[in-house]
Structures are given as structure tokens and as C-alpha cells.
Image: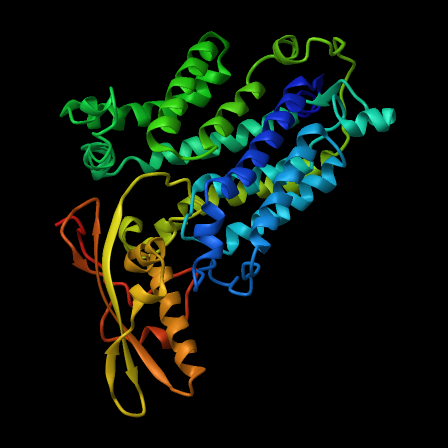
Length: 438
């Protein structure tokens, strides 16, 4: 096993991926400014919803977040050309992790995946060819890498696709309920819009999604089906990019294909001037990272997606254990939530003016997601504490999953502002049902 993992191979796949990766993270950063995403998420809102435990990560004032994202874009370009590669990537990783943790109004799984891939790439010799670093310091230049460099990237995507497949085996996916709701709102699209309204289409998409997620990695690994899997990947991801408009993720996922092909093939397609690498034994450089970083790294990633099985309640209803589990585009939540403030000294009760304080995306967030509802209660308590008033905050909340009937979500008799958040167990103030669909 060890000789195989540490066997030297042509490093063309890693070099090409570095270029794709740097370009895409730069595009994500600059594009977030150009599309108004930074303005909508960080500049305009009066209140921000950080991941719990990271409330101290406040967005920069004024134009600060524009500069922040522009700087991330510059670091992405530096990664692409391989200039001060590890320092540039480390800086981007820290900054990207910061913006991931300081907002969750626009949560996407690929934001989390970017962090993981950044961490992996920090330990890979992706700057040793076709880079400014290698040109300035020829001593680091190399035509090869140990084969494990490809396998850690393959393992990362295998985990993503495996758990994405498993998560789809639930009633609303299997009977086409979610996919029908997802595409019916896009029936106005030209050419394909009418297709989305056909009765058979939601079921077709649901089972094709399961088939693609479950088979794409094995098919890419097997030489006989590799090209077919690549074609299917292009169709699947380009369809998602155009119809669902989910940012860089489709192209990011496609870029991993370079690790499944023979390095010589990648060299001939993308780096024709790169000298042919002649195999010469094994390389045990950085094997400590493989053992002491990557092994625990992947163990944690296998454990996180199954943690919801050890938490009381259905994860689709409670959301407890949902994030960082590759449960991608599986359900649609809607909610109607109001916050009732009670002045403890007078007993006076009144509704908190949520619609005046929050932006539209934030209203949706606190309408149906338990962590955001809890955070809003904490914010309200602090707001009135600054006025010298001690208040309790009660919540009247009804939630619907995938357009099923609305059900009461939060226990209205609990002062949510006085409750502590529990990361590892079910929160008793979330009301449970045998079946939230009925």
C-alpha cells in the first residue's frame, strides 16, 4: 500500500488544478462584488447572523467588505500563477473562512467545500511547476508528485458525492415532491420551461440525481467508463449552472476531473511544453502530513454527516446536524415566525418589528431556521438590555417543509432568550412530530 501511495507520478493534474482553482476563487471573490452579493449580505443589513460561537466576527464598516473581497480576488490570482503560493493560499483560506463564519443568510455547501479544498491544497506541492515561485527559485521546480496527492483530492470528492447520494433517500426526494417544487417555479424559462411542468420530469430528475451522485466517482475511477462519466458530469453541472444558478460550484466540481485521468493525458492536453516525466521510484516527502493531518481530516468528514443519527428528531425538520453534511438542495423550508417581547418588570407584551430590522433574506432565515431564530432572540434581549430593560422573548413559529402543511415549530411557552445553545444534542424547544409531512 505504501509504495503505491508514495510512487512518483507526473504532477500535471495538480498544476492544472491549481490554475483552475486559483481562477475560480478569484472569480468567486470579484464576482461577489460585481453582482451586488457583498452589498446585499454585508453592507446593507443592520443585523448580521454569524455562525454560533463566532458572533465576534463582524463585517467591516463602510466599504471595508468590498476591499476585503477584492483582496481575496487578488490572492486567488496569485494562487493561480503560483506566486508566494502557500502564503497567498493561506491568506485566502483565512479570509474565506472568515466570511463563511460571519454570515449564513446565503449559505451554500460549496462555501464549506472551498475551505476544505484550501486546507488540502496548502499541503500539496502545487507550485513546483509552471509558477512564478518555480521560475524565481528553480531549486523547487519538479515534474513529479507522490500519487497520494491525487488520491486525497479524489477522496474529498468521493465523500461529498457519497453522502449527497445517501441523503437523497428520503420520501420527498424519492416521490419527486422536492424536485417538482424546485422546477415548477422555473416553468417560465424559455425552451425548457414547458419541460419542467411535465409530470414525469420531477421523478426523472430525482432518480438521475441519485444515479449521478452515486455512480460518478466509481465511473471516473474505471478507465472504461471514465469518458462517459466526464460527459455526464458536463451535462449535469452545466444544467445546474444554467437552471439553478449556483455560482462557481458546477465548474469547481468539474475541475476535479483532472485527478481521475492519467497524468500523461492531462499533460498532453493542458501543458504540452512540459517535459515528459520519467518515473524514478518513490517519494516519502511530507508523509507525516498524510498520516497526521489527512487521516484525521477525512475521519472527521465521515463522522460529521452521520452525527444527525445521534440527535433526537428528524434532521429535515430540526436542522440539527444538517450543515457540513453534504445534504445539498434536498428540501425547501418556509416559515412564519413572530417574536413576542415581554418586559419582565411590567409584564407588558408586544411584537418585535422584525420586518423593519431585517432584510428579506434575513426574514426568511429567522422565519424557519432554529439557529437563526435562537440568535434573533438573543439579539432582541441584548438590544433591550442596552436600553436598561430586562425582557423575555417568546416565539410564535410555524414551518413547512417542501410545501407540506405548516406545523408549530417552536414551543411558545419558552423564553428563548434565556436558553443556551446546544451544539451536540436536540434542543427541547423545537417541537417534534412523528411525521412533519402530515
